[in-house]
Length: 273
Image (cartoon, rainbow, N blue to C red; front, side, top):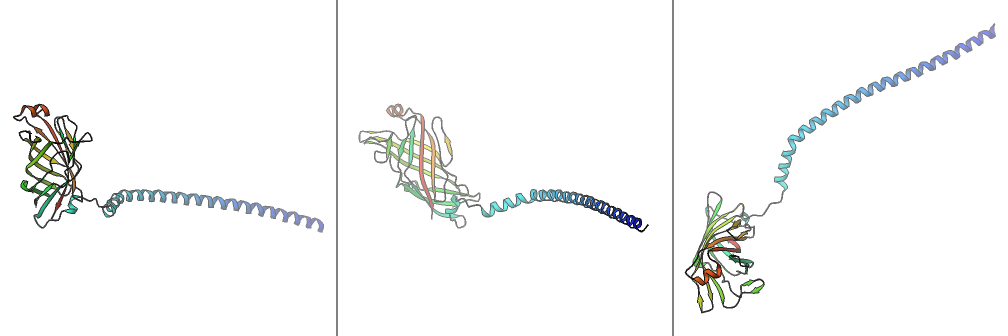
């Protein structure tokens, strides 16, 4: 009997231990499931929060990005040098203005090849006045304006010097116009007589050149050109197209096929004092 009781107790203990093991295993699985469900819920909440944060971030970015970009652009962009940097005015008076003609100019008539013309050393002086619209009025004294002649020492044609004896003398009559200080745009009304001579034996009637010398693009009937605006050093490229009318000289009319276009390209420097 005692032996049977001991066997029964042993069997019962073994069963209880197995039952406890199953219980603990089920409890562990249940705990894991609860943790998993909690984790999923937590992840879901985190995902919702992340999505909300992303929407808010995008909204703020859409608002702040243009403002930030504008601030950065105005605060850190390098300053572009303009004509305004080298012009100093007191009130409405800019004082005197000086025009210096430089090498690298050009002259073209009709359909002939362009002359390469070096006008270095020429120029003149005038007065400058600041206007209320931001422009500067430039008025040069034609009596003080000297432009080197087109001749064998200043001019080449197709790489060859102009033949000795041939000369075109340039006599200015007026030169005045406007400069936009902010942009460097220049427009000068230019009126001059061009005298064509061949040594002492021939002097043609004056060719009247009336044009606007500008830093912009110009186009005539057959000739055109493009200028370059005034920079911070005062340099610019002025171009103009004038229509040359017929003159009282059949030889010159025939030689230049008048009436026709005349293209002038003047590299210059404009300085203020």
